[in-house]
Length: 295
Image 1 (cartoon, rainbow, N blue to C red):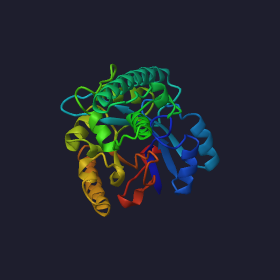
Image 2 (cartoon, one colour; image 1 turned 90 degrees about the vertical axis):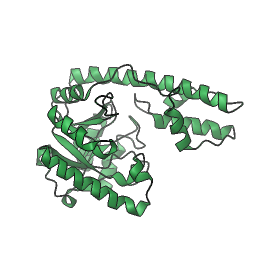
Image 3 (cartoon, one colour; image 1 turned 180 degrees about the vertical axis):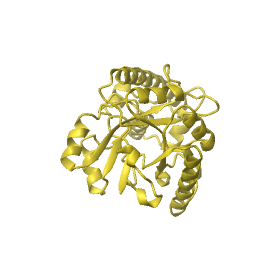
């Protein structure tokens, strides 16, 4: 069975609309899918209606980022089968989205200052222009990067995407969100909304075993196997040839299966699809995944 319990839409930092995701899933033979945008559930109810038309099983979901703690940086927790009408969840997502917007505005200001000092004649990018790149309430770094690169092209300035992301990480440029949740708070919020907390892409973190152990101790119930071949933000993936990435991906996923058994965590499979490359969906048979806990 082909499934994908972690995909994004234009409501956050994806390239495909909420209406098109179920149609895309149908095209790729995916039978079960979950839209898990960052800090927002604005893909619903539109996605539900389209999934019904396409006869695709759609699990309502969301992806939350945790604050840095215990040496773990930017761990992501996916909530599956959440109640999208839960008022506590909606209120918390509003606070998280507002904090993200504020952080991105400050980041853009810092980047504009940096580029003005580096390039004579730099014309600052306006946040309104960045915001027009998303149909939802979430503005991500990819939206900022795309607008800056387009502006640079107009000014005949060559800025590579990789260089821009390095600028984002500079101490004088990087910004922190004023409101963030701990891993424990993310797990609790998902459970209160009737959902299942799942640890996202564990091999994106420096210490996947330690993260998984903590996640289970705090009440997490599942962990993702992932199409790491497309996740070039992971250094171990980015620095090897594309044909080697599938081998590396399998090693990561087999290790995840082993750790999940150790910590009594359920397994799901995903692509973390953003519409920028590759294709969504993973076969459950490849790793012997039993998804009855999701149905």
